[in-house]
Image 1 (tube, one colour):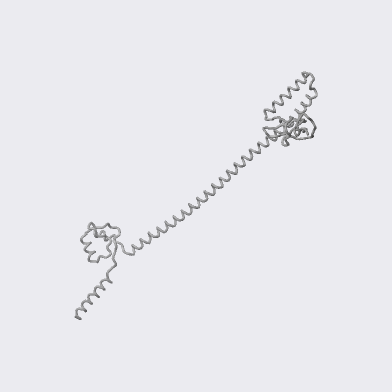
Image 2 (spheres, rainbow, N blue to C red):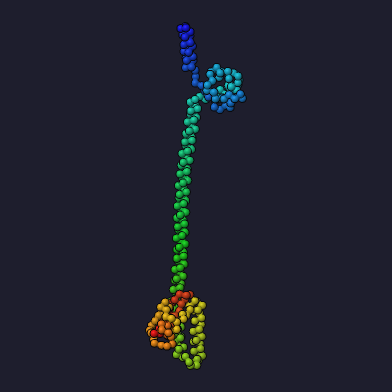
Length: 243
């Protein structure tokens, strides 16, 4: 019994020595599986089985064995691939950040452009209104001077009223009518005031009079006609109001 145990122990020690002297297995990563379904990646094959495979495969087995790599090479390849993946991930994150920054800049530039366009449009409209107002004021100043001349014509006609008009007076009246027609084409309109209710917005009262010709609070007499230009008052009528 003891002799048999010693023999078994001797065989175990010999097998251990063979395992220590045996080179690490190699792995065939690039060869396709055999036709019988065996995987070329066979880390569990023993040396005898590998030799049997090699002998059975002939030259093909020798070519396969020449392409086998060690475990260290496999780990190196995995590490290299991991480094490439990490680098690509960093590049992807960097590009995404740059794209986000560019998108933010584009939105900021668009917002500035829209504000500038809106400000310019407001400036254009304001300038147009100011220009129209300036033209209106300039036109009003000229028209007021012409209206003063019309007042002088009307005073002259009042002096000769009831008398037979000479050719000279008729010529002056023709000039007056032409001036009045020209002002009407420009948008000048005479304000109705006589016997109208007194309106402080368009009438300027210079006095009151007791009369039966107009109701109380109405215009009894017009001393100076009032005019508007395109619906805008340019000169109020100077009137006397009935008590």
